[in-house]
Image (cartoon, rainbow, N blue to C red; front, side, top):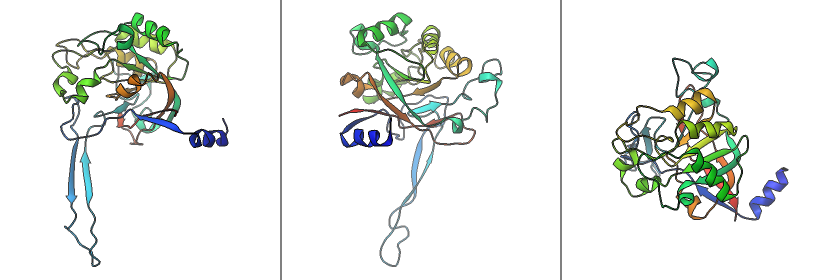
Amino acid sequence: MTTQALLDAVAGGLRVVDLGRMLTVGMPQSPNHPAYWHAHPRRHGDMVRADGGSAANDMISMGTHVGTHVDALSHVSQDGRLHQDRSMVELGVHTITPMVRRGVLLDVPATLGVDRLEAGQEITVADLEATVARQGVAIGAGDVVLVRSGWGQHFDAGDGDTFRGLTTGVPGVSTAGATWLADHGVHAVGADTIAFEMLSPGAGHGLLPAHRVLLVEHGIYIVETMALEELAQAAIHEFLFVLSPLPLFGATGSPVRPLAVVGA
């Protein structure tokens, strides 16, 4: 597509759906990562200029896997080995190029006729295949595939304990589903849950086999804690996906604000 064609598309009107979560103190997150914190070390009036003007500033601290974020390939190892036996620096989040790709939403609850999936429910290969068939949208190599479970509704409702699912579990794909996605040659995957994959009741975040399949074995990035309800409500299943991580040298992940762009 030419630059002029892109400009013409913008001039014709676009709908941009924000897939990122607002970062707030106390937001639901995995207990494995440092919490988000925000403070104003300088407030308006603390230092006033001669003309009466003043400026405020901020300080934040947080883990790189808090809120909506992308996992770099350096995030997970298996038996001491990272993807393709490369180093942490070679696979850090600073190596992820900005994503401007075809995006596909797989709305699994809509396929199963429910509002959201149950705690600890596995999204099976059959569920994924049935969703592709119902939506009539194919998955191609290089796509970014977002899997909706409806679990993000708990985040929206402020029910952090249920969203984390440390004792009750969280729905998602596990090894078979992750392998199915990898076999399609996708570039990245994402979900509206805290750890992308199924978390069994009582297991906490101790075992993450889908992370192994995707990050270590196939070099596929994972985006977690996404807001997917607006896309689902509008039945938007295919879109331009835009994401750019912060170039944090050597980091294992980065907060992101992914976007889905479609014609107005």
